[in-house]
Length: 195
Image 1 (cartoon, rainbow, N blue to C red):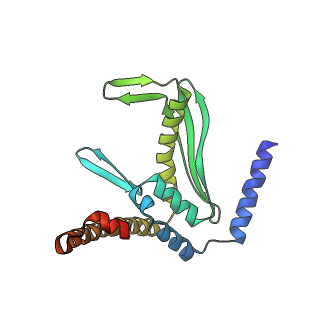
Image 2: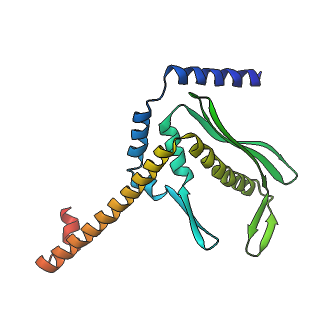
Image 3: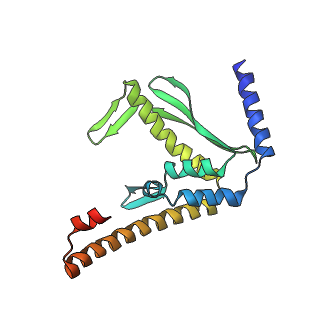
């Protein structure tokens, strides 16, 4: 009964996606508009050291925003099985309009590696967190595999522009404060009261 219900939900979602197809230009514009938010731009890229170099790319937060604004996508993480100290997990992203699907099935050992060695996880919250973390990485890859590369590149570029504009604004505010203080003898507290 549950399988039948899920099949009907998938069929209904595909029918709705075909009936109301995405406007790719409007979707891309929504993604770019979302990337003008400073809070998103600040968390849009990941970076970590590997082999003496820094590895960077779009973060899961940016990928989720792109998927939400691209539309007609079904995406998520599902834990398929948990046994013998490991979880089998599936991350997926499915374009309901084109019937294109990216799926990654992987195993997450319930082990935390530290510089002092590894240890088994037994607390359900720790297990959930490690599975969610590993799942988010694969989900990001699935979403980025579905959304066109030029849209992803435009979103990353807009996030960089947003961050640069914020840095420029902070620099202009600092210069203005210094000018009022040095040229007119107006302390920052007076400016804050006026503003």
